[in-house]
Length: 416
Ligand code: UDP
Image 1 (cartoon, rainbow, N blue to C red):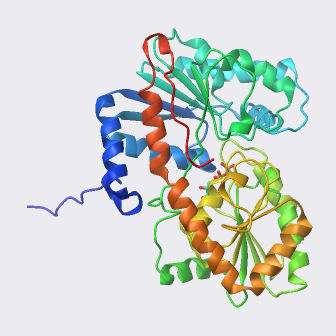
Image 2: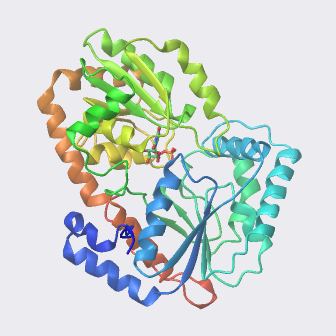
Image 3: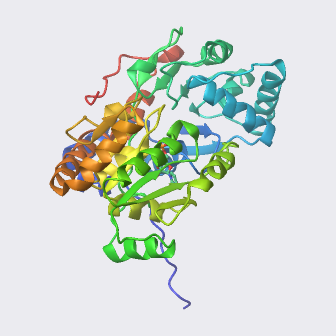
């Protein structure tokens, strides 16, 4: 006989019992049972980088573990396409745009090509974010289609929004992350806040030795307290504001800033944002562009303070990720961040560079405060932002479609 074959495993719903209890696991299994063998597809625009790919990586596996055949496809396109869709993304979060017919042509043509090469004959289709949105126009619709938008839609550019509405209104329902993103559209709007998977590489338990190893690997000094922000290199995450806040805080308390980011394949602006920061690098300002989930995990655990100083944020998984690890988190008081952090209780919310600097100084000087906020933060995530809640909401939604794709009343989340 040859060597034993190593059996690979995936996380199953029972594994979550330690975090959510027996009753919640039982309830999720009961909701999944009548949906077994349904064939469901999720479509987005990147396999890695960004929160949507993190969510889909865990969601699709766990759903398969529950017996629902759940697939994940990614739309393909040339750089021109992603340049246009990133401009739409920015405009939907409130930026100006020069909306031309050429942009619309590139967008619609590439999505048509994707429709030709993808054969979506599933029992239900979930389309994530604006990039693949027009796919629906190219199928004879026989099943429910849902558009799941992860962006901060608190102040969308009207020109882009109005252009997208005819596509959006072809869907049977739309999911937004927070109630304040509600729009005037003719279709049902549902609100699911995202959540984090405690077993992902970014969140799983990490021994101190592994944390040390990751930090050492990247030459991150640990002689002074670490102030950390982890985000795609995107101006909505305000990396410059983070550097400015750090520079002010450092005049009061010695510390080191670590800015770690990655660049998603559907975000052509990331490289330029990263380069624009490099002149600020010095021995106390470390800026790294890497894709390393274990490094993210290690930094969130070792940091004295975690920042997520966004100026727009659909949800901001990095906030819950850090809170889950008991970190003291300072977040921009915007979008989904303000739903995660209860100001002064499970972290701090800030609206300016000066406020961020003050909170960094306060936290660095007060380890008891850091511990208190961190403990409350972990509980907050356990109650509201663990992944199984998202799974349950998807199960509720899938089970809520009646004939003709009408949607039954659904319960809202209790953590709003
Ligand atoms: N992330 C990562 N490496 C990085 C930066 C981010 O793995 O260098 C992960 C991060 O841990 C989180 C996701 O990417 O899981 C970002 O999601 P979030 O909702 O915070 O922001 P988005 O990028 O979707 O705007």
